[in-house]
Image (cartoon, rainbow, N blue to C red; front, side, top):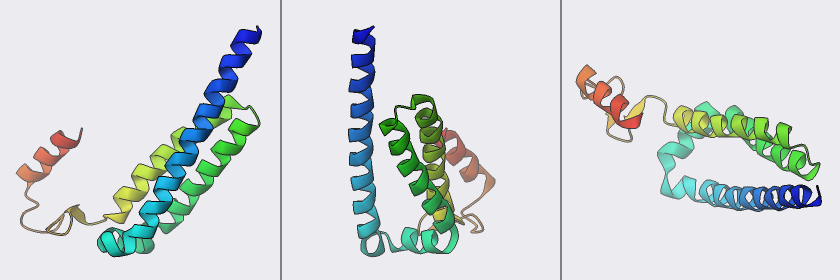
Length: 122
């Protein structure tokens, strides 16, 4: 049994290191967003801020669960965090298909283009 416990500990620490690295990259992205991606930044502030904050809390809770050796809870929370990341990204681009040129309401948003983009993103 000690070998199994040892491998769990290794994977737990790897998950914590990966999470810390991902959080650092996310923080860099947030710092650069106002100047490098102003459209996304404005969309985040106007549409997705509550979901972004919730996603950050899911990430912190995941780290706590890993530290407390609660792997099942950490797995559940990381799924919620990932869904929150994708959801907040989508909400931040609200009304844009391809920022800044193609909006959902624009004539370029014809059914053929929307279907092609749907196929290309799945």
